Each structure stands twice: as structure tokens, then as C-alpha cells.
Image: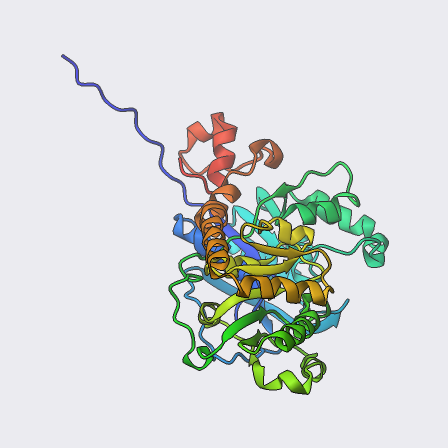
Length: 421
């Protein structure tokens, strides 16, 4: 009697992935968090990850010091990232005289299989990585939306399309990004793969700061960029404070416009408004101190601030914009106000939530469940792994002895993108 033998399993190949971005810690922001989370999750899945980013010419100070998340991947810094203020927002531009040559050397020295560029339109470093990519697969994730009729986008339509055409896969963090760029790039496909969130870090179990426990707190989180809604938040709170005296506004954020923002505060509410400054790893504690998160943003590709609040079990009052609608559900995870500048509408929504504790708890619990079930990094990482083989093509380099992968190009693509055999 012969003993049945299970067929031998193919070895699980280690894939070498280079993630390129202008944004990385200690620079705070949504793209930074996505780069770090992406690299951490892929490393957790057993692959070799190299993050390539510039050094910051200016490192913004945070009130909680240099406390940064643990890094489990290799980091290489080339060039310098210079902060600039364009189109009403603070951004970075990378500079460096030998950036392209250095990138080529790094790609070859590390034997990179996949290059994943976050914000492939970024000046200098991301574009240079795309031009110097000799890897089997080059992926780009688009993180931004642009207003309708945005003139620079129309003027740069051809070079931007050439950038998109060079990518094997074009990932957009929401349908809002697809709609923003798709009309300027007919015939090109985009994959909407959402941003991820560390649901263990942004947790309802965080302990709030003791000095914020004596009132009911409305929380705003974000840079003081023109479109993030800090002005509407302050004016909405002023209306709310005129109707009730049990509330405080806590503003977590900073930026070059801070002197102007501080001048927006009416004298009668100054004692009930806290400028907490730029906060990094202590954000879950501030979320835990709040009854409601308020974010009247006018333009966003996704809404990481919303997702952080939802993951922390906090109900949200937000503007009804396409990037936010991709993340939260109006009437389920929070309330949406149709116009981002509707101060009376935001004040009324905040007042309604404050008056109904069961309503807030229900929405906070629903948001937490949605964050964990739809946006946790384990889920987003799997979606990145499962990018369509038909889209990426089959020009792949099998590892030594991986003969079966040569005969099965679909499996080879999935292996190269990090899927488990």
C-alpha cells in the first residue's frame, strides 16, 4: 500500500520592493503615513523593503518631540526636500544634482524587483525614479485631487500623461482622484485602492490628556492650509459657543499661516479654544479627549483625518466632498454638511450631536467597525498584492530554480507583487 504524498509546495519568494516618496517621517502628513504603513505592511508579509526619500531641509517641530513610529524596513535618503507654499498648501520639492545617477545605483545594488512611487508627479525625486526604473514592475500611487479647471494641470497635460503611461499600474487612493485625473488621461486605467490605517494605534483605548477633561471637546486636526477648513471650524465654534457654555475647541495642527489663524479667534471664545500645535504620536490621545471630530475641508483626495477619527471611535462632522464620501457614510459614521464654508450648518450639526450621547456612541462605533473592516493595513496590503496580472504584464524575472513560475506568468506576477504562493 502506497502512502499518499502531498505535492511539494513552491517556495515563497522574497520580493525586493523600493518605495519612493518625497514624504517620509519626520515630516508629518497623509502621504508620510501611507508610505510608512505601506512599507511596514509589506515587510510584515516577509519581503525586503527599501524606502527612498530625501532629507528634510527643514524639520517642523512637534509638541511631542521626536517620537516616531518604529521602522522595520531600510531607509535611504538622497537629495534635499525644500518646503514651499503653492496653491494654498504647504508642499515639498526635492533637489539634488546627482539624484538620477544615485537612484540607478541604488536600484541595481539592491536588485529591486518592484518600484512603487507615491505621488509620481512629485518634482525631481519621484519623476527621476520613474525615468531610472529598470525593474520588471513600476507602480505609481496618486494621492491628490485638483480643482475643476485647474490651469497648471491643463498646461502640463502632455508631460503628466507621459508619466502615467510609463507606469505598469496606476493606483488612486479614491474615486475622487480617478475622476480628477481620468478626464485628462483618456484611455488609461486606474485602480482605486484606499489608504490604510493602523487600527491598533488609532484606538478608542487611548488615554486622553488630563488637562482637557473638564469640558466637552470639539477637535480639529490638520495643517493650516487654505482648504483644510480651520477658518470655518473657528467661526462655527463661535456660533456654537454663543448657544452653550459646556464646549471647547481643540485645534491640533500648525503651519505658516498660524498668525493669521490666531487672529480669526473672537475675544469672547479665546478661553475656550486651545491651540495644541503640531502633534505626532500623541494624536490618539487628543482624539480620545474629544466628543466630535470636525473637518470642513473643501478639497481632499481621501480624508486620512476622518479615518483616524473613525478608527479611534470618534463621530465626525465633515464637509460633503467626494474624497470624504469615499471614507465615511453620512448618517452612519457621522454627519456631512453640504458646503464646506457653511458655518451655521456645521454649528447645527455639532449641536445636534452634543445633545444626543446615544447618537454619538452609535456613530463612533460604526466608524470604528468600518475602519477595521475596510481600511486596516492588512486589508489594504492584500489589495496592493492583488493588482491585476493583465494590467502589469508578464515581463518578469523568475528567481533561480523557479521554473514553474516561468510557465505560469499570472502566478509570477502575483509573486512579484508580494502575494503568498
